Length: 120
Image (cartoon, rainbow, N blue to C red):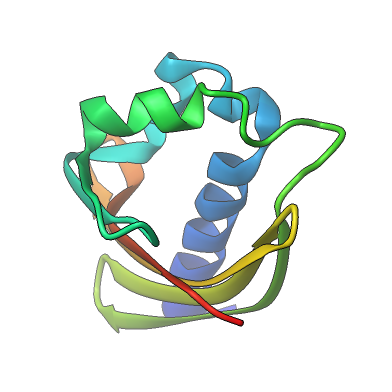
């Protein structure tokens, strides 16, 4: 496995952790995976930062009984320390294409940007 493949694997691991109901229930664990400069444009069109997204992640919209189903996950290393991921997410029938940028920091891989777009 080369460095680009390792970087993509780390970003995918982080992305899947952020979708894990147990991680989402813990603001501290979520913040460990978000870059301090994190921004998201949600499927709703709303813009979020690291602090405001905690109301969503801890809101119980994802539970062990109804986890987010992920398919078509792929990633590419855009530059050393920068990975772009795309995938399809299904959260209780609400399907969206997701796109995330991850960057390597002194504290490890952190999500820098995320966007969701609803799909039919």
